[in-house]
Amino acid sequence: MESWVADIEFERPSGVGRVMKKLLINPIGNHMPGKLLRGLLRFTRSELAKSNWIDPGGWRSMVISYDGSPERMVDRILVKSGTIPMAARNRKKLAARLIAKLIDQVAQQPAHVLCLGAGPGHIIMEAMAQAGHQAEATLVDISEDAFDYGRQLAERCGLRDRVRFIQGDVRDIKKMLDNRVDIVKMIGICEYLEDDQIVSIVKAVSGMMPPNASIVFNSLSNRHGTDAFFRRVFGLHMIHRSVEQLQSLMGQAGFCDFDSFAEPLMVYEVVVGKRGPGRENSPKGRE
Image 1 (tube, rainbow, N blue to C red):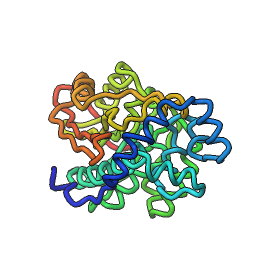
Image 2: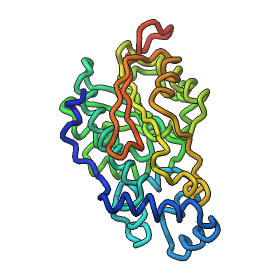
Image 3: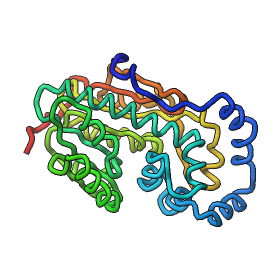
């Protein structure tokens, strides 16, 4: 599987940029009074900050980070030089490539991908565009606003008839869907869930998956060095877990045979696991 991602062109900070972050930018962001920083971001009319204040870690802030070239100067500085936005763009490239390759391995076509906490669906649509085989996707998110943008994105990508949007809490997935799932995508969601919530969700989706079906998720390391800034200024309370900790949680739902892939900043690792045999529920065919 390493060969699948060998040619991805990742973003990397310059040597000077790394030194500046470590010695100047991160200490200022982590230790300057939060009230002062929030006031500065309000004064400069930061859309990234506003999006996180409305919905911490929500889809709007991810769209701004993924775009890489927002309208306002303050946001361009934040998303171009910030470790988390840069790492998130790397994670997007990595996850899309892995999912595209997994789609091509599914014997029963079109493959069905279930995306949890999907937002508007940037990653899955990029993956479907890259894949050689056909796929359909079901996108679940608690924010219905994300789907208006998602439908526009699907139209631009020529995928309007191959994506389905469901508004709801991913913890209730079993009430929303009962057809076969070949791949589950949980990118950018585990860092906002408690351990028991992750296990509950993954147990529910595993019952919809045949043996050897894939799950794709990511870990989050605190190597980004700006956790205090995100908590105090943006209201983001992310849970940092190692790959091993997440694999243990996924293992409680019957997943095994994990492979992990780190993006260059080592903030995120994208992990692919397989549903093992022995689950009680058998997935139904597509409706």
